[in-house]
Image (cartoon, rainbow, N blue to C red; front, side, top):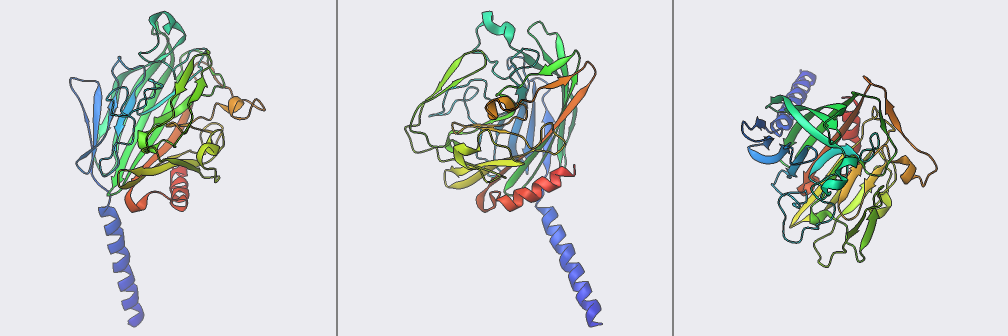
Length: 347
């Protein structure tokens, strides 16, 4: 009987632990607007993020993005500037997905800052319909968009599914994006792509000198060095690269971490084995651009190799990413991120 009592106790303990774990999963509410081109996402009754897709933006974005405690981890500028916000790269808004060179068109760098007479070499991603919104322990948002030139000729059709979930100190975004070619389409190897996130000022790495960056059209952007002590971020990859050394290296995941006020915060992006050119290269800049770009190999390897992706008309490609936002004592460590990557791999 003692053995069965122990088994019973173990079962009760296991069930209790499972129930306790399940209770940590908070309700996600996904609500579309009938008047504005946006979808609100709440987790545990608190704002998490908003999907914005007006034609006044050159791409759809998740903006702003918050921790479970409500700390905004994305830069405010240009939509809602905060005191001290850097004002470089106005096309960096929240979390987005696009690319610098698709059939010669630049989808990445397009923004209100591009003069009308130069717009012809820039692409536009126009969301034309929301396909699904669902609330629950996992919230779902699915949309359809067209990657077009300025004349609205469609190059790619995009279908993206977001899954949102969260606990008392963590938020997770799973993004699955399928791109179907409406015409023959080539992603020409380029530095700026594909999943991008612009970080809040606090999560930038401290810098003492101005930095100069040049895009593929020769446009130069100066990023001013910080004169305050707010910026305190750092990068770590699954391959053990830290700080500025994370840039241009490969890894299954990369995280940025730092203090925001009195709280510890981390954001991790996890790649998926089914993605092209896995594991991805990290386009992770100290000034606050945090991006995963599998198609920038030529730049990241100093010309030793390149990765162009071609789709014939009717062909498609899918990209999957997991974004993990943590705060407090459970800011994601490497071991936990490895487990989350293994779990994501099975999706």
